[in-house]
Length: 95
Image (cartoon, rainbow, N blue to C red; front, side, top):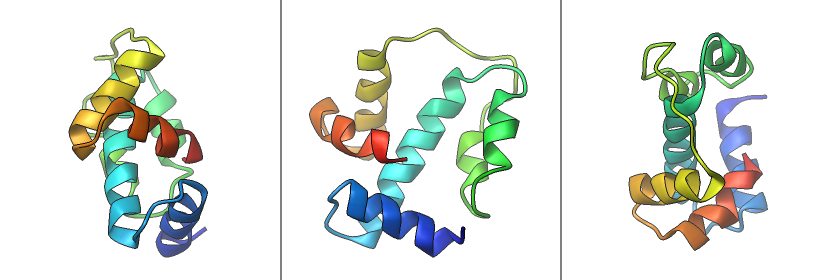
């Protein structure tokens, strides 16, 4: 899948208003997810993403994983995107 197709699918599934909004949602979600993945899990997932998205997932070095709850994760995604966790809950599962 190509970058544009991936972003457009997230936009449609997340019922987001624009391509830019979907890109921001993807960036926030992948960056937050990267904070919590351990070992090779981040690299494995990144290898399946379209070019241009993997770097958001791999910003933190491997081995720096933290434990978290779903509410904590959604709050962090929302803070990165500048929305509340209810809005983050709407688009995050679409990735």
